[in-house]
Length: 209
Image 1 (cartoon, rainbow, N blue to C red):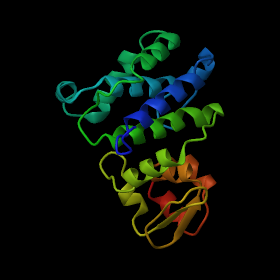
Image 2 (cartoon, rainbow, N blue to C red):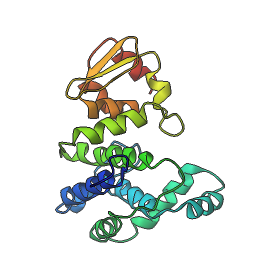
Image 3 (cartoon, one colour):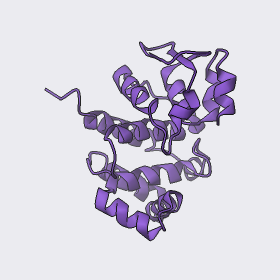
């Protein structure tokens, strides 16, 4: 029986689902701007592949090589993983879809990255995924307390979040309600998700970027 505390089966499932959704993309679709500012759909997948290959020692070496500038390191990873054709990039992502290697940090970080970045890719392409509720609840519970990089804790401070399609709520204050995936995307700074939410706290959440 699978360990419910282990997020890796959830991560692997979501990677495989994303790879399946992207199998028939055209070159034009691969170039579509994602919800991740400055990155195309192909760039985001390249970043996910780069992350899936990373180990703590490799991460520290890459950070040092980038002058300890995270964005520079990430951009280099994207450039490396998008050097070939889109088909080659997708094949490389599939190759590492079952990997358990990762940079330093809690393993739930990579579950949240997989859910958020997969949505960064799918939404602009008009694709949807019916995520299992446990996957989204686990992601939301992790994201809501994070500040470095994601900045979610700062965004939702003093707000009351309620999912309308899952048994999940957090915080107190002006209300922000909507689908749990939309709440996750808004917590991680995706402004496009705000249109899917309602409540007096939505404007406040939007102002916090």
